[in-house]
Image (cartoon, rainbow, N blue to C red; front, side, top):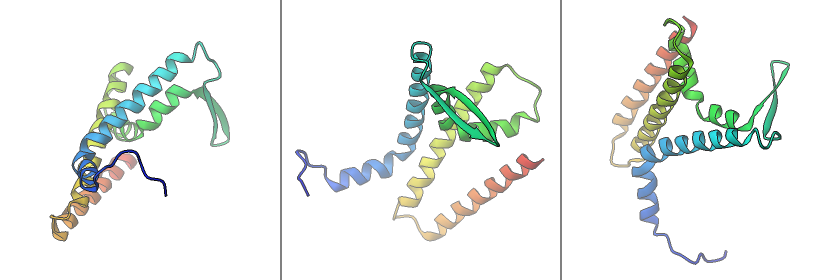
Length: 147
């Protein structure tokens, strides 16, 4: 195995991923959205930047930038989409901003949960309590989805 020209201490790398996940995941989400919007901005100049797929037997094509941004925002679409069906219609800009904010918060909490699970100083009882809370929220989300 070839040697790297630089040396990364293992403890720094593990500390970065352990303590930084709640920052890394939301920042990477924002980066994905910005890359998607940049690709969407290039679409008028490079029309081949499209993604075609088939869903339920229907073929559709969309600009690659919008597809990338929407793919990163799936948690926001699922959560906000299920909540907005109970509210009166709102302006599409507010809806998009709400999806982005909820996705950001989702990725933050996902990083926080992963940090807790990777933390060896926490007892298994605390981790089990966290699992119970997560399952409770998932069941509440499913109840809202099917209401």
